[in-house]
Amino acid sequence: MRRGKTRILALGLLAALLVSSAHVPVPSGDVASAASSDYQLLAHLIAGEARGEPYLGKVAVGAVVMNRVKSPKFPSTIAGVVYQPWAFTSVADGQIDLPPDPESYQAAQDALAGWDPTYGALYFYNPARVSSLWIYSRPVTIVIGSHYFAR
Image (cartoon, rainbow, N blue to C red; front, side, top):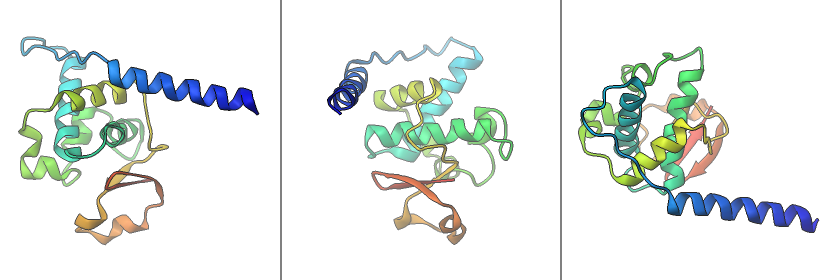
């Protein structure tokens, strides 16, 4: 029992250390690789969709994008997922064009690295702002901040 608690505590401390001390590399505008453009686009989407949310919620929004890329139900690229018609409010209202904050860049990096705090969610929504009731038919995997994450 004690070994399990120690292991959980150690993992929690490691995660906190990684989040608090992480360096946020922001590629310069002259870098033209696919990985850089995916990173930039994901950071912009996270900033637009999860502004004001806790860090874990920002990573979770990025994870939803990555889960969609892996799913045969969605486009197979980050740009395809982000720009799929009616998929994200921040694309429709132009918030995706606002500059991301450092935390959104770090969240994008963590999501691209495979961190998924959503347990495989393909959707997220804020129940205070839902405009289409079909989302309530999706099973919720976790609630982080004001977002519900669902499959």
